[in-house]
Length: 220
Ligand code: DC
Image 1 (cartoon, rainbow, N blue to C red):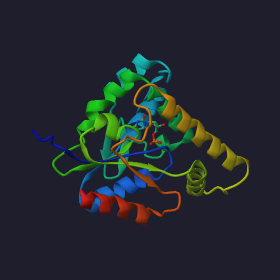
Image 2 (image 1 turned 60 degrees about the vertical axis):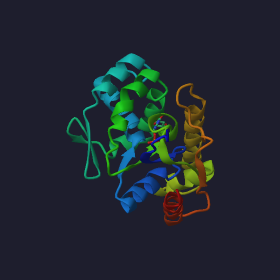
Image 3 (image 1 turned 30 degrees about the vertical axis):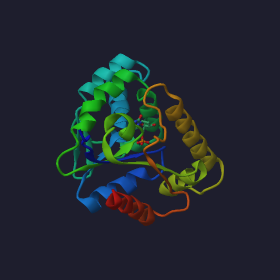
Image 4 (image 1 turned 90 degrees about the horizontal axis):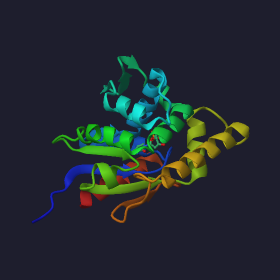
């Protein structure tokens, strides 16, 4: 019996690697939907904060994740009707997302919700465990990364900060700390799977990275 592959491109990689931009552009080019799975973990952290649940309280956070009142619509992310598209992007909520994401109950609570993003249109999903856990039968799996320094520079430019000095050093150390947490956790750690293609974008622009993914997809 041949194993049916899911019409999914799974793009996993570390924080600030640019995978979100690449994934959403690939989705637009192919007419697929796009799943920003990190946003679900960020929303969970923000929702916990708003509801007064501590990020290290696995079961309280999982219960909130289960009923997360989040809506993705027209490029906006709403939580309980409030536009939180920017509020979930802070470094502090990123750290909170990383903390809640280490708990099996939280990951389990968000699993089906992520799978529900897949329709007949096809899906590009980005995160840490798209290829390993959420869509193990994805047609194409990619591990997208860049060096920590390059990722810190991209983040600094996004924030309008110089690529040197105290603020920059802080960004770099935050990125390294989050990489470490995402790689070392026991559940669904960030790893390059044996069946994932490596895309190192340290010396590549967005267009080139998008083209590479589209070329790979055309080849399968
Ligand atoms: O991709 P991001 O920076 O928005 O992700 C925020 C955090 O969520 C990240 O530190 C790890 C976690 N995450 C995860 O554990 N699994 C995913 N599929 C996506 C994100």
